Image 1 (cartoon, one colour):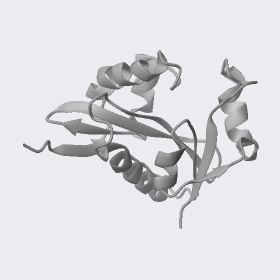
Image 2: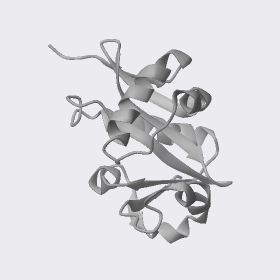
Image 3: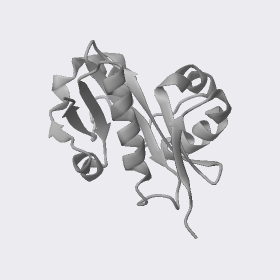
Length: 155
């Protein structure tokens, strides 16, 4: 039996499921934690994937500069990884970036191979001062960051 996957824009009713999914990564220090309140304000920037009505994946965009956006909070529920859900979310996020007129999409990640598979290239973190001043300044790993920066330029 095949599971039907649906990729769609997030809605306010997704906040709790988003919180639980992101929290699972945050406790492993893989993803920045987000409060339910913050997630509620970010709903227009999120896409989600459902399997049989259950939220099993998410990702969002955060505009950092005039033409630069960051992929954030990209996560897949345990048991659903390796099924193409991440690429479904990425396709949706890249389409959203194009619709918003953004030309550069970046991410800080531990999953470099996934991003390379989706057309990103590894770059130096220092080329993103917008990211450093917006988020990194508040991060506990600020001076010992082990994430890899990736970039995709959209046509």
